[in-house]
Image 1 (cartoon, rainbow, N blue to C red):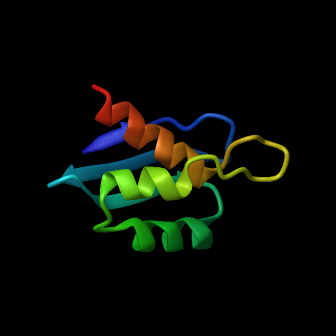
Image 2 (cartoon, one colour):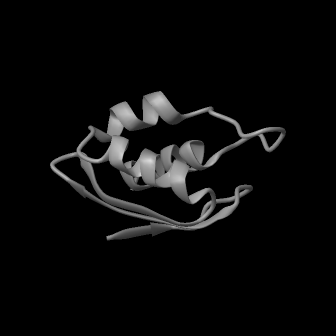
Image 3 (spheres, one colour):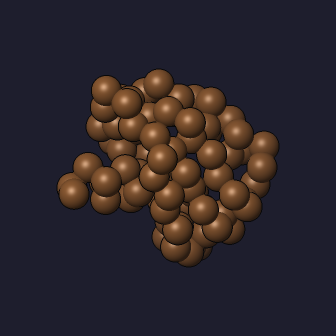
Length: 81
């Protein structure tokens, strides 16, 4: 299980596993609960690179980032280790 502390958003933590380069067990602590539950269900089982490509660069208001963008950052960080 990986855990990531997002920056610049309402959620406080993103947790997930990666199995066979697929995102599994994705969950968020804090943030907009309904939206993040939906995001978690949509990303479940998706290829890591597809999630990064689809979610990277999404912003929330004037924050310059978003919970989906922070998920992409978390996955990139793990991938580049």
